[in-house]
Amino acid sequence: MTHENDKTVATVPPGGTIGILGGGQLGRMIALSAARLGINAHIYCPDPNSPAFDVTPRKTVAAYDDLAALSDFAGAVDVVTFEFENVPAETAEFLSARTCLRPNALSLAVAQDRLREKTFFRDRAIATAPFADVSSETDLLEAVDAIGTPAILKTRRLGYDGKGQRRIETRQQAADAWQALKRQPCILEGLVNFTSEVSLVLARGVNGETAFYDLAENRHENHILRRSVVPAGLASDCTRRAREIGETLLADLDYIGVLAIEFFVVETRSGSDIPSQKLLVNEIAPRVHNSGHWTEAACPTSQFEQHVRAICGWPLGSSERYFDVRMSNLLGAEADGWADVAAQADCIPHLYGKSETRDGRKMGHITQILRNGVDIVERN
Ligand code: AMP
Image 1 (cartoon, rainbow, N blue to C red):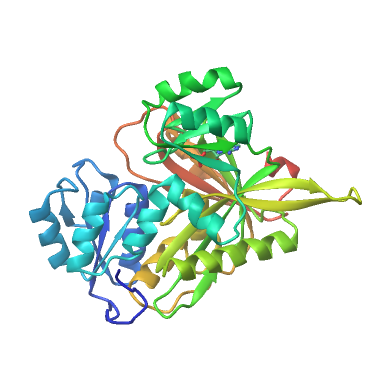
Image 2: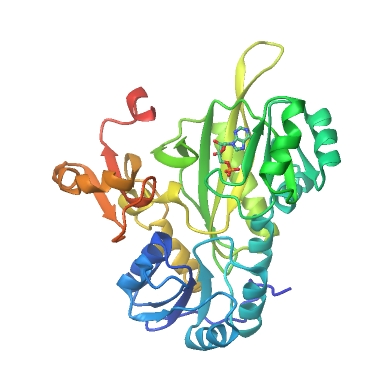
């Protein structure tokens, strides 16, 4: 295993080049932040129409298993990072052997596999929804008996935005769910009756320095992030626990770069009947995250710049927040209203330059400054 904090990789200075696997909006925003620090970005993506290609002349259009192209890419950059967690393990290993991959292959491997991820949490006494390994229909029935219903069957790999998931309301629905997910290795998770969903975006630099952004409260629609409001309005012991969990994960993954952790907030009642909040980790993303887009409008150092700083061995920047914010995604045709958005005071638009509009496709986002703070309307 490569140890990323052994300082064997020199700092990438201005004029150096970072390589980014993936050419979506996250890669584009990382590249834009790199440019502000005088650092070049080289995007590697199989899709020639990738939005990140528009912001840098350095590009490779090739498959993730094209070893010749990967080898040239590794030779052209000082450090490699990625904007999506489903980078094939072989690609990560191939690049790790030739250049410095940040975050490391271990972080990718843990985040790519829901069973490995949940087990990683459990081994560290980090609370999650109850879960069980499911490799056959018999396993599934046993898991349903142990966990109960309702529950959610999720493929171990390649699920995102609700894809690769089936809700199971009764034991009788188990066989159908197993067929629907094509009998792939899965986990069964108990359904969490959460009061809200929050996320923590945090970073670790090469010297083990860490930075935390304020927690965001996230609202999803059709499994896609609709909006994030900051601050999340959690009790201070919950915020402390979220940071503790973050510290543990960063250290144990030997992590370099920006990491996002998604949590369910559940209300528990003790004997005294006074409700208190508890956090369950849902999943981690070893990359910059949609729920951290507000940082570009509200913090001295955005999550994108923080990621570039971390992977380039720079000191981390301030993650202080200037004001309360609400970030809303512009999905599909919503981005056609760009002129109205641009005319609104206290609304900071960011459009991704995607040529094709599709229903539910993330076309941009807006960050609204809430000068009077967050009220109940903003949270809904
Ligand atoms: P995931 O792909 O695991 O992040 O799931 C996407 C969304 O589905 C989450 O943000 C939740 O809103 C919901 N969800 C996932 N797992 C659970 C669970 N165990 N209990 C309740 N809701 C869940």
